[in-house]
Amino acid sequence: MSEPFSQPIDASTRYCAVLGHPVKHSASPAMQNAGIAALGLNWRYLAFDVDPSNLREAVLGAKRMGFVGVNLTVPHKLLAVEMVDALDETAKTWGAVNTIGFEAGSDGEIRSHGFNTDADAITQSLREDLSVELRGAKVLLLGAGGAGRVAALKLVADGVGELYVVNRTESKAAAVAEEIRQRHPAVKVSVGYPRGEVDLLLNATSLGLKPEDASALDEGKFSLRQAKAVYDMIYRPAETPLLHAAKAGGCRAANGLGMLLYQGAKALEIWSGRPAPVAVMRRALERNVYG
Image 1 (spheres, rainbow, N blue to C red):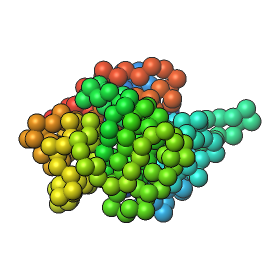
Image 2 (image 1 turned 30 degrees about the vertical axis):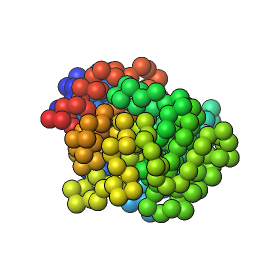
Image 3 (image 1 turned 180 degrees about the vertical axis):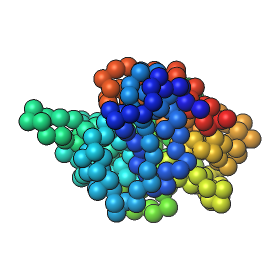
Image 4 (image 1 turned 180 degrees about the horizontal axis):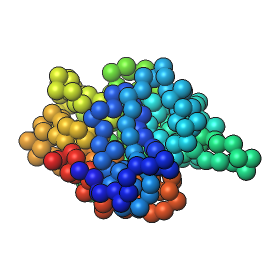
């Protein structure tokens, strides 16, 4: 249940949305509509399942229909980099777009402007939810896709000492590792599982979204007993099998609700030009995810 809107939808109501594939699990509408209502904006936030082959048309359609902006989730964040009229420094730095704003230029033409609000949200949530000190930390990252790559780059930018990247397709992990070596040559980065303990295990794959999913972690190669803290970017289900096992093993553990909150709050600030009501958005998220 979201915060109540002060006025009904009318002909001047504007829209924003999250585009993903799949997207029906998303808690973004509950969170964003609560924030929008608290700010007294005549906006509504929706969710659309968009196949990657239709993403360009969907973004263009949102621009043509006067949307305030859109958020992008799996698997659209890398694709969108080539689909916007301009990239913010955040999108250029991290090489992915999860937020698009539609803005009128001096000539009156509407342009799409891509941002990345994920990177800062990841590390803010790690610090708040798990009390992880990233500087000098030893981290095992599962996943080298769009979310994994951004997480890897942000972690090394924030000073982790050692990073181990594991991905189902090893060449993707190798590509991320090589990019890190080029950008941050002082960081020790390896492809594959470490032998000893890590300060943090971070799951950036989508494995765990579905009940039938296999674990993203190969426990034959790495035991959860070797991890001091475990973070799963998935927030629905609120406790994935990975998190359940981590808690049973005595690890500090957290899901991706904090990351979703902070990336969404920043997106709302970009669109509205006003501080986001984070506490309101957090309550809406917790009601939606935890019931």
